[in-house]
Amino acid sequence: MNDTALADDKAARSPLQKTYHYVMQACGLAAGVIIGVVSIVIVLNVMSRNLGFGSIYGTVEGSEYAIAAATFLAAPWVLYHGAHVRVDLLQQALPRPYRNFLEMGINLLGALISLCFGYFLLATGTDYLSRGTMVYKSFVFPEWWTFLLPVLCFALLTLEFLRRLWRLMLPRREVT
Image (cartoon, rainbow, N blue to C red):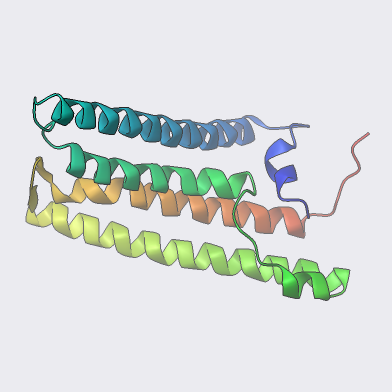
């Protein structure tokens, strides 16, 4: 199955499918904007230091959090568009009927792993929320905030793997 077909199939989209598509597009856009802003801030920080004004406070730590956020936002978007790295030597060696079963197994495994990661991240984040722990570095904020995007990421990854599995299980329809 062509992975890009999952994102490019605009025929007969329901409102739920359109909403899902826009959520995925928003994730990709947000990740791109974050990377762009980080790039600009780093350049400004270097210029500021070279001009003798000193470093912009929190640039390093802010960039670390921002790059992590961009990664967690981009992961579901990349999977949605089928732009992830695939090693499909085994899949290509199998006869066509078995390829679909392998692909289904891979998607099911991906969904289960994503669900497990998401569950444990959510459990850890809620534990930090109940304890009221804080991060004290350049910025001070509740520690549970650092779990919001990873939980969202793994929830969206779980949905995407299940959507891919569902599409493989449905009979193919001919587009006329």
